[in-house]
Image (cartoon, rainbow, N blue to C red; front, side, top):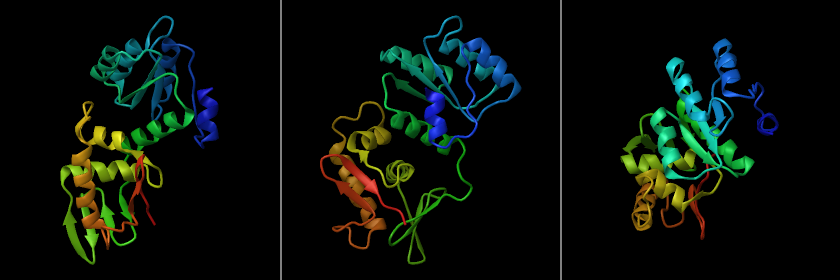
Length: 210
């Protein structure tokens, strides 16, 4: 099922393994750009497989599980997992997670995005406006990067808060609005009428790139 999802999304080389042991044999011959593994498997489970992978490679690993306990997530992250997705999930969510991981692990050499009035250099964390460079703060950069990774799509307030301050983000919404206002002052011609960083009422924000 997952193989067909990725192939329909344009991924041309998708390898599958029916067990952890088979996966080890497969990647010993050809290391993929990314690995997705279930946690609960007969024989070698996902955690054991991840340990084996980390002994030979830093390839990004996304773990899937039917269990949502925090302890499982912590165990996966401690062993070197890059992300964790609880079943059931929508195919689109999986594809977005994978896309975000691949962009983070294999960044483009020249990461610049063009907005309506400015150019943003993500490698230097700078906004280029009328030939002048304006630095972004760490929080502004993190928020803008999350929006850029999902350019043209809605990013929820919760996702932006979590990206900015971690797992415990409740109560951060007001601070997020302050960061958004400062970002608009740097990237918009008229911050009160934004055309690049727009609000989607009741849902979140969206970055419009040229």
